[in-house]
Length: 155
Image (cartoon, rainbow, N blue to C red; front, side, top):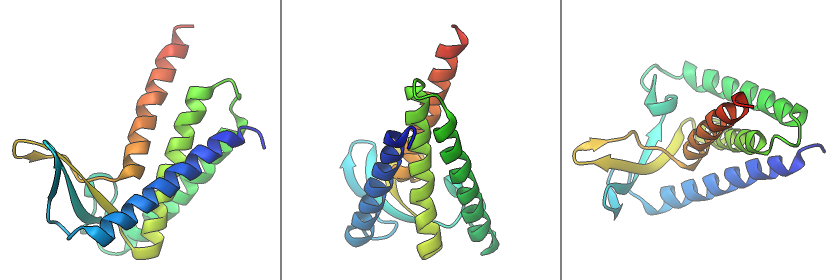
């Protein structure tokens, strides 16, 4: 399969994401911070909404809406991964991260109805919304795509 290596990246992201969420669910108490480093806690949280808990209290309809959206976007990204030139390694790596992150969160949403989050970054009394490894992969991918866009727009 063309660009198959990058699908392995996606699979690795899904595996690490699901293992870390399993660890969080079995070792952390919901909404009770467990300090790890200065400005970083592990805090188990259940996100029924989208990114940053958007629409978290909108009822159950959005569970299936977000699941459907994730499936659709995963298919689109997989198609892009197959069609993109194998020379576009940074772009393919980013797509692999996005696909893995989307599938990781999709599995939670389908299996339990919410996304398990547990990484709590903060400064003083300001806490960033709690997130997980899948979210991190997606955000890193977004930065990589911006870098790739800037790099390729100059050539």
